[in-house]
Image (cartoon, rainbow, N blue to C red; front, side, top):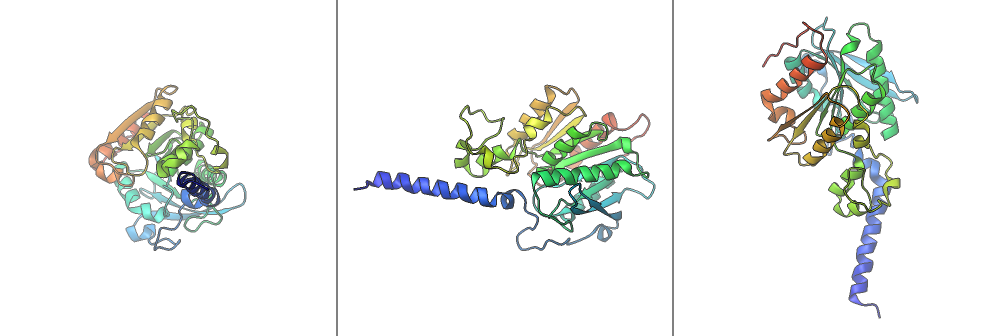
Length: 311
């Protein structure tokens, strides 16, 4: 006769196996969320609603996927700096327009907003390989423009966008002047154990302190190992960390900074005690924008070309 203990073990094991099977089958839907619950894939607003100077830009990724972007200018004749912004995993670029409007006011910069494949008006389906190609297409476009100073292109990534931004910055030391990361994870492998704690015994990145082999790492199709990329970046990096981040443990940003600073002396870490995952830019107030402004001034802009703050 099977004991209750055996039944319990079999039951827990069955649940774990079922959970892992679901993770393997639907992991892209967990990592990439182009449509927020209750909303549609389309843009709820466009830059003209906020009276921003912009143009619709259509790009083609290297594998032929058609991508939509907005290039928003501080003023008609503004040449830079230009921020290439990579968004978080959920929603689309329209949901970041209010933040971008405030960014323009405070930094007097241009902003290029890319819709990843499968997001907003872009075609295709998201994946790590695909989004990496999308980011490269956006940077290549900016690098070929004649109406901006292409020596002042700064990559800015938040959350998933930080992972995207780190890769494109590493791959393009001649095109990207600096990198800004906000509330970014060390890797999706490490985040698996944060979101589903039992997975930490089977999945984990190189930042994990565990010596136990992570036998299911191979099933993760979008590992986004930012911790392995960050140490290879030569350009200046600004780390912006919200200490109340409810999604990504702030320790991830600390580990990224520590890894980068081992090889790069031009790294700056700024934390904001009240910053959550999505609102650090808002909770940080003037201090947030002053940190970004100072970073740009000291690491990107030429002598005498000053970012004039509106704070």
